[in-house]
Image (cartoon, rainbow, N blue to C red):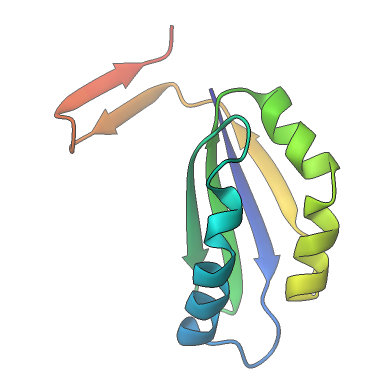
Length: 103
């Protein structure tokens, strides 16, 4: 698995409610995305947005990010996203009541 953190500037004047409306509208596009396990849409008071993704593999993530996705983000928010990859080594899952470690 791989975690990707994608950060981008939101357009001027987009507050929490505006960001929520955009995120809520586009969330269904991620429902059947090949290789995607989880996605969090995030907002900061500093006018930035972020997506935190958990992918089955880095290859699955890079396939999506290399396609029309990057241009769609640029068109939607007016900024180029920054993408960082992290390998999850230990996961605390309180909902499942477990701690998982990487093999």
